[in-house]
Amino acid sequence: MAAKRPYPCILTHSSYTFEYRHTMGEYDNEELSRIVAELNRAAPSQKSSASGRIPASTASLDKLLSTASNRNASDVVIVAGAPAVYRINGALNLASGPGLDAEEVRGLLLPLLEPSQLEELQRKKSVDLSFVREGLGRFRINIHHQRGTLAASIRLLPSRIPSLEWLHLPASLAKLVERRQGLVLVTGPTGCGKTSTLAALIDLVNTRRAAHVVTIEDPVEYQHPNRSSIIEQIEVGRDTPDFAITLRSIMRQTPDVILVGEMRDAETMATALTAAETGHLVFSTLHTNDAVQAVSRILDSFGSSNQPQIRQQISLSLAAVIAQQLIPGVDGVSRWPATEIMIATDAVRALIRKGEDHQLRSQISVGRAEGMMTMEQSLAELVRANRITRDTALAHCFRVDEFNRYSA
Image (cartoon, rainbow, N blue to C red; front, side, top):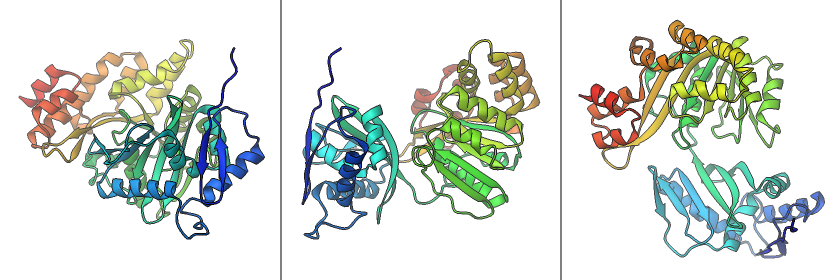
């Protein structure tokens, strides 16, 4: 097997020049620490250079983030060979000016990294973190490799914790925080607002209950102050190595409410189900399109020999599944959430326990009195309220015949 060939990038700041190589093992820990210390001295959160000027790379990043904030963008995408791209109301908009070359991209991104994060980027070729820019706010970033160069996706994090009303979500979801145990899942594609929905639910807990809340996030996005509740927020990579290890240890910290940013593996899922069974209210997310798929996704993460036991656990521990999409509004600017809500009633639990998942949709469609609705029912309501067009609803529904029946 051919040896990896490092490709260098020369990064120049006011008082130093050094070479960054992507091949793992190029630097030992001491040298990594020295390199990142040099980079961080150039970051705006640190003191300015001797000339009193902020280095061009960090000044340019601040300019990109300021423009994104002023344009109400949700994300900034940085890829070598193209200008920065802003995602505004779900649509991509190219920044003005020439494209960024590979060295400029690395100069923008590397000063954000601590030594351990740079090492992770070298080892795994991807790293997630959050950072703060004074006067601009908090940001979540994923730095990764593509075509042999660095690239990044930056999410702008609102300083204000959203409410269900502000997010235009059904008020009936507030009842979920009154539960003392059970698993509440929020599902949907990337960028559909799952994290915001969870933040709104945790904020309700914080307002209404004297509870001990522990969150495990990668990274922490919304920062919750202590009000009625005591809230601990644990960040993967900074406070803990992974979700599964921390979730096991949390069980010994007497929490009342647990938030797991994402159920990524079978071990995390099994521990979350056990926590929900044993007197804890657990919130988490999955990437599935509808509520029924969430049950299948959990089961498929386990071997066939374990699935009967896991199915039994789901039937006992599940409280609700909320599947959501963000739909472009009629004005071309706003976006509205379409939601599918499955509440774990006795009938729903019985169907899950018996393996009759194909009948869950019919239970959702007739369960409006319990706060349930299908995605097609939600889309039809948005059309009737003149918030989205019928064509847009058809493009986002999963069952056209069902949507036509509800919107007739």
